[in-house]
Length: 349
Image (cartoon, rainbow, N blue to C red; front, side, top):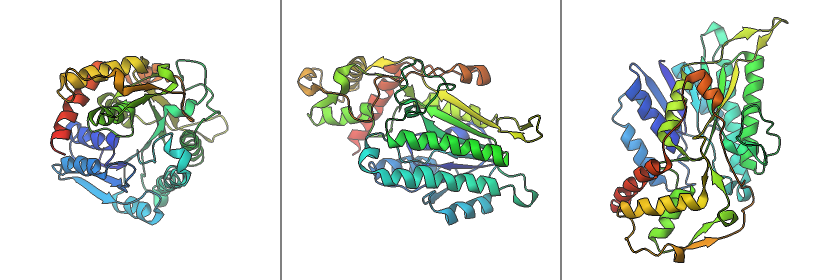
């Protein structure tokens, strides 16, 4: 690996990936792109970027992947070997009220990445050797079969966010077929950990509890989520980056799409009420909340929200088969690390 593009580099997964790449490999140039939008507190993104300043061969570009000229110029300048597209407008509920930003980033932005990968081969150049991109467990939508397998049909999205991620998979498949671009999509399952996204339940619940506000537990607590710790996600991404799908031709002499999909999840769905119990215990242990905090007075069981699903559960057998890796961080350990980070974060606010 030489020149690597990581879009969404100031994001939760992106910033942790950049750190891990520099700790794992030598002689890298990593170009990070992020538009630094205010979907959540920009200070978090700025703090993540500050931690990346220690790496002299990290280049940060503030910009939007929906800006085709910017993306084309970066590809021309750096001749990327590997592209990891993590930039996207995230969030299921936000897509209900703000659909246009999902089309801009997740559809137009991803199209620009695909086009740049396609033209990276122009003039006989080696071009991009592997495009890795973030999909989501949300693509499984109303799928009633569990655990979710990458071979399952995913034609019933229940949010625009999920529809854009499914579109990314279809677009990548078409470009892999037409232009022989090795690409791998990764369906992430509820990523959490220190310095994560404030719109995620564990972070949002913590913020509300600290302020003495009431937390809403959807579907009356009868939801299960496959929580996946950030270090496991990053380990999975790095392993996948190094092994692009093979380029082969079919009987018709045309390329068989060098295309793959994997789930990255903990394969251990946790009930939301159990999750909240563990979170509150770890917040007390870390000193974020007092020992005598009245949690029952700050919990409200409410109906399911539009766009949500009752359960997420990753079948990671394909990931285990091809990469010998399975996420395994225990939820309590992961939430403990988050609570300890949050104690320092709130102290430094």
